[in-house]
Structure formats: structure tokens, C-alpha cells
Image 1 (spheres, rainbow, N blue to C red):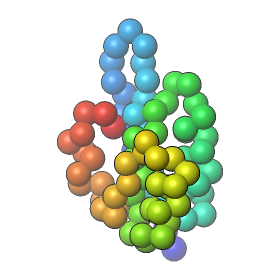
Image 2: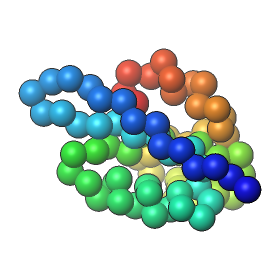
Image 3: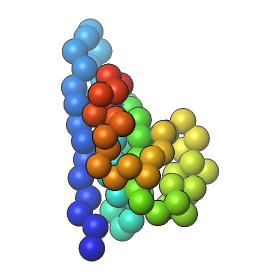
Length: 82
């Protein structure tokens, strides 16, 4: 069973926009990503999942969202956009 987590990091500035990364695109992941993409105060940056078929769905639906199989999000922890 996957445990779904949402990585949220605030960026300071005149207009605060939250860059988000979702770990796990199984049961709740699609709902989380869809809502974050539709939000005006958030920017969906990346989705991590170990299954390539799930990442292909993300890429097809949201071409601007980065995908990674690194479910520990190592590559995005140092990324200033998340």
C-alpha cells in the first residue's frame, strides 16, 4: 500500500505561489494533482511514482509537470521551484 505525501515549500515574494510535488500517483494522486493544477495559488512542479505507466499518464495529461521515478524525491529536494 502506498503512502501518499505532498511536498510543500513556500517561496517568498510579492505573490506567494506554492510549488508542489506529489509522491505517488495511485489512488489519491490523480485527484491531488488535478486540484493543484487548477489552483491559482499553487504550481504543480513534479510527480514521483515508481510505476512508469502512471508517470506516462501524468505526462500525457499535464505536459508541463516534471515526472520522476525517484519516489524519495531526492532530485527535487534541492530544486528551488518546489
